[in-house]
Amino acid sequence: MTGQKRTTAMNEIGVAVDVGSTTIGVCCVDLIHKTEILSFSFANPQYIYGADVVTRIKYCLDNKGNAKKMKALVENVLQEKLMEKLGVDYRYIRRIAYSGNTVMLHILRGLSVEGLAYAPFEPIDVAYYESKGFLCEHNKVLERNDCEVIYNYLPGFSAFVGADILVGAEYLQIGKTEGYELLIDLGTNGELLLLNKERGFATSTACGPVFDYVISGAKYGSESIKVIANCVKRGLIDKTGKLVDTFFETGISLDRNFTIKQENIRNLQLAKGAIYAGIECLLKKAGITAQDVAKVYISGGLGFYMDKRDAFTLKILPKEFDNKIIISGNTSLEGAKRFLLSDSEKRVEILKMWENIRKCTKSFELATCERFQEIYLNSLDFI
Image (cartoon, rainbow, N blue to C red; front, side, top):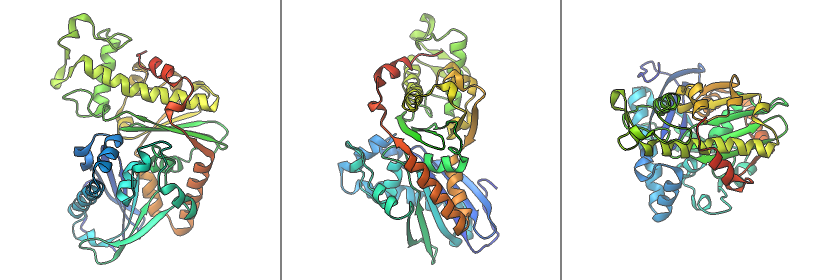
């Protein structure tokens, strides 16, 4: 029933929300019958104030009222969408669970983002989660809903590794064996978690909206990746990302108004190089190689549509990951959905899992990785 309006009345509805920098995913569930009602997504309206978390942090700090404006933007559009999709059943909403990156959840909770702007980059909510059993919860009354609604804000790792990756890891049940498993959330703020049953390492990469808007005319980031990968295979773009002389000035015009220009390729290289370098730094921290990784989970909208072969051609992922990749969809949203549908006993188990993963995982900034600049520069080329 994805995106359809439901007309059958019920007693309790839960809403799982994944607040991404570019896209917000929503899933409504029947809390009584433990079933999905509908799901949909929409563009994050905060985009008008900045394409990535860094520019949005700056906007929040520029003026006292800006953070409230950003919070209201998301809440108002979400409410409008829920009213539209659920119709009269909107009044049965009883619980909303928010997952997403740390900056987005700070803004939604009305917390200051100042600590996320400057070293040592400490999120305000860390102490809260550690003292309150890893779950922030409060109640409020929604417009056109005269019952109190419970709001849950799911926990994350650090300033730039958020609830989306932690919730996704629990949903996928990774980190239960001696072998390392890697979770990569490909989005505006690419987040990575390398985990086994004893320890983990997490980091994030500032990709910006490049994967979503690489080429004018492309509807999805995966389309841009595919056409650039094809041009690399055909020799129209060399290993360094340079267009051949014939197309250097004009770019390559393709079907459906696609035009690949040199700046498009360079922007993609910066974003994909950040992902590849992030993976290399995680492996370095763990003291292993790409060959040692048992499974690689790709989540996020881009990962769902991307052809794995294109990821190897453009060196977004190491070629050693071939035959290890599992396309996982929106694991952040699925994890929030599972939390909503679980009974109280199961929720306690989920909270413990989140806590265990977080306690055994070291979150670090890529800039602190030894030889990061060298690793990053070596990651820019194509295969």
